[in-house]
Image (cartoon, rainbow, N blue to C red; front, top):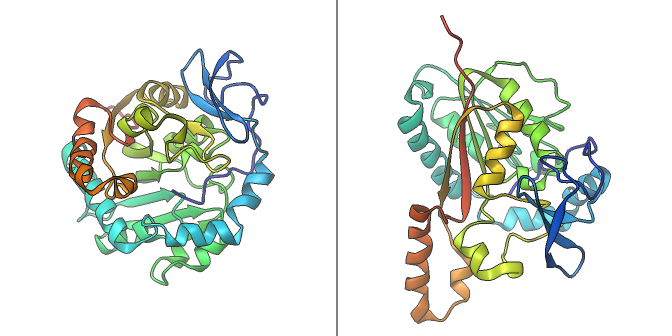
Length: 295
């Protein structure tokens, strides 16, 4: 979860059109307490309708109840951030070892919240920058990284092109009115040979399939888009990426297991841990590269 989710620019399509491909052909999946989830018939993105405005979203993410809920979340925690950084390091060692320190590398975390991941990365030797739209979150950031966090929408901050070795975006694109535009910006900001790691809940995962409309990530207006591997692949291609791999992963903490009878918890935990082997993990992870310059 992140608070740097609501862009300040309006989505380029009408309310009924897909936020990734722009198609006006969709099929209703779930009727919710307020609004519906529909699936695009062209790129298969699932999205929420009716769509809130950018101003409504910006106001929502700056409300005290949302900030307190995020602060209490396990995702706003140094232990969680250390685990997330360890996973990022493992991915880099496997797919792009040249991007790891000790030579100083630049890491940009889009939607950094209070900057927990920035702290872990800075301690590991990275030159870090974060972006965040909620000033309340920046106010809560640790002093070691507070000055590295830029207040504002990634689309309007005018960061330098071809400048970052690694760009991360954890649980941000599901909040966006314009996910392809943000992915395109990530592509522009990466240096040639750089890597982006995009993580988002997996609508095709085990939990989503079992729980249906009661899946814990169906929480509009906070989450507006719901990706599966195919729709995320489509969005990456629209943004200019041609070299990428999409994985699924299991969460560090599985909240839904705690509500099960004690005898079922070990079985459910094992199922969730094994789900990524079959591509059914709770989160999608896109590892995407900007082509290196030839010659």
